[in-house]
Image (cartoon, rainbow, N blue to C red; front, side, top):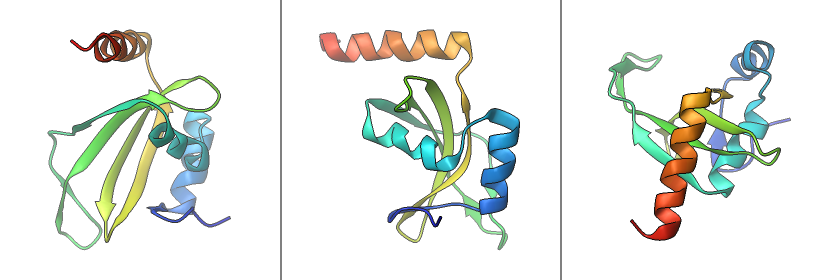
Length: 106
């Protein structure tokens, strides 16, 4: 099944991600439907054509209630999913603490 409009990914990488992290990219994009926080990944990346690429890391909840970390970049107006995994306990605590601050307006 092709990615929904506005998203893209490499299907082989999607299958590898599912094997390694038990999350398919079709599920990972749900993170953008619910409260989430995105930051720029400070590391340097180069795409397949040798051009510098800015990657972002988004932390949020997917439909199953699992907090996930999704690495992605923007390419030609689409969000390209690079990887997705379940958040570690410290990352989950940080997500819920930041969410609580946001709700309280701090």
